[in-house]
Amino acid sequence: MPIPIRIPTNLRKLTNDLDTVPATGETVGALLDDLDRQFPGMKERLCDENGKVRRFVGVYLNDEDIRFLGETATPVKEGDELSIVPAIAGG
Amino acid sequence: MENRPYFSNLRCRECGRSYPKEAVHICEFDFGPLEAAYDYEAIRPRLSREIIAARPRSMWRYRELLPIDGEPTVGTQVGFTPLIRARRLAERLGVEELYIKNDTVNYPTLSFKDRVVSVALSRARELGFQVVACASTGNLANSVAANAAAAGLTSYVLIPADLEQGKVLGSLVYGTNVVGIHGAYDQVNRLCSEIAGKYGWGFVNVNLRPYYAEGSKTMGFEIAEQLGWKLPRHTVIPMASGSLLTKIHKAYTEFAKLGLVEETPASVHGAQASGCGPISAAMKKATDIVKPVSKPDTIVKSLAIGTPADGYYAIHAMRETGGSAEDVTDPEVVEGIRLLAETEGIFAETAGGVTVACARKLIESGAIPRDESIVLCITGHGLKTQEAVIGKCGEPRLINPSLREFDEKIGATLQPNPANA
Image (tube, rainbow over all chains, first blue to last red):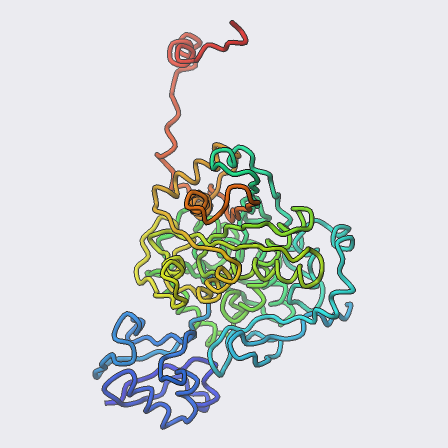
């Protein structure tokens, strides 16, 4: 059951300009791993050396910030949608 | 047009990678914010106190330290607002040397946001944008709408649907396109990040953010110049994203680096509302991990950012300078607004109430010593957030146009004036 992942402009060089790509996995972390398998280099941009999502990366599962859910351990199910959005904006 | 290489490029604050001076705001490697970088060696011989002082009284007197290539074309009259010695408020707060940097009278839309918009739209024109936009809690929307109108640019302003009437009307009147979003500011912000990538608009606080943010430095430059070319020992600054605080700190640092002021200790202190105080909370816990606030709950809508983009850097600026953070409840905010109005004749919006009330707490706790110089940054006008104080400042006494009624209802309540006795 592939989950659509929305890719921000600054990462589309890696996805051949695709703004949405499907990935599979049981958790948010697994989706990001699958994304990296399909598009090598993704993970190091999104996560630091400890595998934690970087300070300025926003990851949203169905519009909810994963920091309010279970971070990368948050489970995903069919019909969910994941968005990666830069955190630096506004103010 | 004069060729001025002072503004060199954009640079990632996290990894230091350089980027061209385009409409980009984040590093493609680590998502870190891009910031304007300058050639200070080139600027130093060209900028002196005398040169600046001889220029027109606007924020553009510091233009070598602002990220545009040519002459400013939008908001050329913005800034150089009064710095006033606040003796009556100082007495009430029990301090010796207190100043108000009064951006409630900034031109043209009565908030510090005219500073950032002036830079962002001048740069937007240089980059060839026809449509400009923003995500806003109100003040920024007003400023983008007004300055875009005056510059002949099309604008879209995206705001939370539940803003104060004054701030909604204060955008609509300029003929901008106002889009109200059912959601909190952070949701508006996120939507704007997605729109900016898709529509190719110049979003002042998204893809033009590196330019926009630098405009806030001018508040710090002006404070230092108006104090007689020196840094205040303490500056109290309201925090929403935390950007203003980091940029005032940067302004002080740049002035010292260029020899325009002596490098003296200058603590920056951050002020937030308790109903949305993620930066203050992190600072008090002595961590730099800012835990987002998912549902801000405060009358201070202009500071209600639950996921502050510059929170991390604001915390480091406060720590490096020996500053501190504080937050206050809604009733304290209203008290702060009234105290400033009653002592200094300045009607500030809710963020101003936050700054005054937080300053009071920082003084009482000893974080700000009573015998050192203090500047309070008052960033927006109170007529924009009337809902916050309506019914909390008393009511007019109503009488008929009759002298007898005036004598009975007003005259009889007067205290006898000893001078006339």
